[in-house]
Image (tube, rainbow, N blue to C red):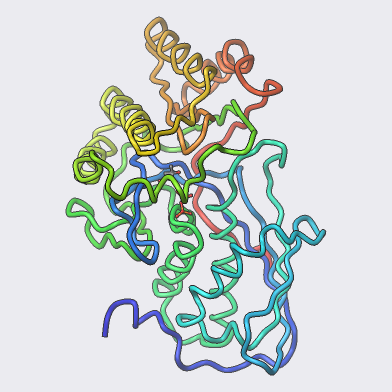
Length: 360
Ligand code: DP6
């Protein structure tokens, strides 16, 4: 029996009445980046992220018992039908049906909304897949209440991963590691685990302001980007580097050395984009204003000694990271000097959060 087999639900009852569940799940920002994957959403390298607090998806799952054994669901976004989400959700249900055969007993109505403005162009797959998976596991608890809380949490993260890799880091904890790596005990390729070591108080309530540089459709999706790490000339060394960086970050999180933190986090962001630029075909997701912002952050840090740094996800937007005790200075700097590089001057202040919440 493999570990995966232990997550297959075999004994369960059927609920005969319809019902409804609601969960919120936050987005997360990776400091060590997941870029490259194997079959079945297994990451090519480990990643580590800070969970966010304000950028959330709220999903209500209505379930209604039925007699056939097909996948069946309706999708709503803010109460209105949203067919464009269907292929992704269909694929998600197909991937989880062996682990969660009870889903075939119900017709679902999935209603989802985001707390961040839809005009922001922020990808919501991490928060969206985490919120849906939290609902599925809440349903599982109703049909099979006999497992431990740890089991349900791990399985929620496992299901989220099958929806979108980074989503598995949005279930529980403020710092989450996904991907088996020697320096983190109990780390797994199957689900995210809470960072299990001492963390310096400087990282409490760490701030992340997301600068919305470009809200347009990305020219290359993450899915295609991950794909291009196959046969990439630098892939093996990069995957190894991610293991090394997690081991280093473990020490930095303990010591609280922000100089080392900044160097590692910014280097990870630029490495991610270097991988994109050295793929075949190659591509660039940063925009001129992404670079303007990076240069402004470097100048500000040099002149003020305030330990602010940036990271990037798979797009042009910039995440500005800084300790809570510099909130005022950095937020003034963002409003005065960085907002002008954002589309419609838009940015979102966020901070460290703790994962999914039941709103039922
Ligand atoms: C650059 O999790 O969006 O944000 O598994 O194909 O859904 P899929 O990819 P996704 O990739 C995220 C990549 C990243 C880095 C990260 O979050 O670790």
